Every structure is written in C-alpha cells, then in structure tokens.
Length: 269
Image (cartoon, rainbow, N blue to C red; front, top):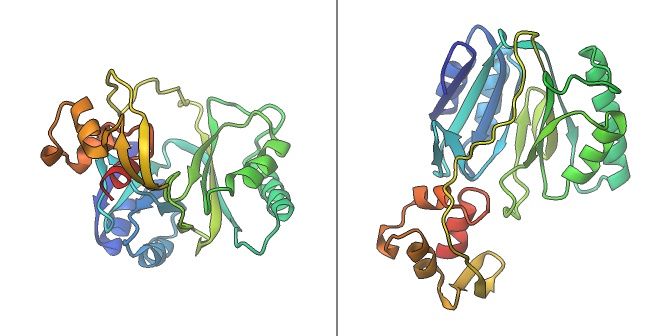
C-alpha cells in the first residue's frame, strides 16, 4: 500500500529501512521485524532521523497482501504528516520487578498527559479521528496498560497487542523514539479533519469449510495429530494440498485462527 499518505517498505538492512522510511514528510513510522533482525541498530538508525516511531518483533509481517515470515527481515510503514493533526509517542518500563498496580498507574498518568498535549477530551474522544496503537512487551502486559488507559478514557479506540505474537512465550522487544527493550510503547494518532478511520470488514485470510480438532500434542507448541491424523496431513488435506507442497504462505493464508507463522511452527516443529 503506497500512496501520497502511506508508504510501506521491507528489507534486511536496518540502515536502508530507516533511510527509506524517514521521508521528509513522515509523521509516524511503524516497524515490525523478525526474531533475528538487528532491532537495536534499527532503533539507532531511526533515532538519528528525528522522526517519531514505534515497532516490535512480530512473527508474520504483512506487506502488500502477503506475509513475510523470514526471521531476519523487517517491514516499515510510514504515515505522512499530511494525514496527522498530531502524534504522541511514549513508552513505559515493563520489567518483571514492577508490580501490576505500578504499571497500571504509570499507564494512566502517561495516557492522561498525552491526551492533554493533543487537546483530546478524554470524556468525549472523536472515535473516527483518534486511536492509540499499543505494542506491549510480555503476554500479560496488556492488562495493566489497557486498564490504565481505560481509567482515563473508557471509549478511546485502541489497537495493537503483545510483541512477537500470541504464542510467543519469549518476551519480545519493542522499540520507539524514546528507547528499546522491555517496554510498552504507545503511539496516539489524531487525524486531520479531512480524514477518518473506518472499520475494515475484509480479511487477509482465506476461510475454508471443515473443522480441525487437535487430538494429540507433544507440547503446547507442537501438535502431533489433528482429527486423529498426522497434523500436517490433516491440515494439507483441508486446504487441498499435499504435505510436500506446503509453503510458509499457506500457513499465513490459512492461519488456524492463530497469529501468522504460529500455525506453521505448531504443525511442523
């Protein structure tokens, strides 16, 4: 998706991604990278541009209606300043020594401050022109962070999730203009009056008839059998392919209702 307001790029070199993403009119850069990508270098390269950015590790990265599953690549999406009336990027510490309540309180304070700087009324946000993007270190971190935001503005729109994907039991890193590592990063976007958000009712995934039931596992991340058959065989038969023809794109398109890439690892580990 490339036009005068949105640009997407992909690559394996942090310096090239930063150079291409940080266009003169860049208002916000969003980055998603594989587990083996040099995200620290990407952070430092983006930091030198002076442009606001957020990002995290993600198993499957959507680019032009296809998913990139390589562990050493990254995707960047640049939103033009022509779209944005304002942007606030901030982060908070998510290290395990912190209590649930301290994370919640910090989230509330940071969210209140960001809304104030953007002149957004917490009691009456414009749901068509304001949204928070949250990228959160750790599977459970969403709870206290979102509780803090909801305590400030119950109806403020929020998107995002845990870094790495729902089945990534490793604590995956996040990056933003203010730092990188064990962070919860948030970007609050306020669109100009000429633009608004609309619900996307389409899907990037294919639906098929049939039902799959896991009947045997070796571990939470390793399925041995589905419907009483070897897992890969049952999966391949449902999408009308042979096991030998299965490719990463198949698992991205037919996701088993999981994050892109997770289905492939569960079945083929």
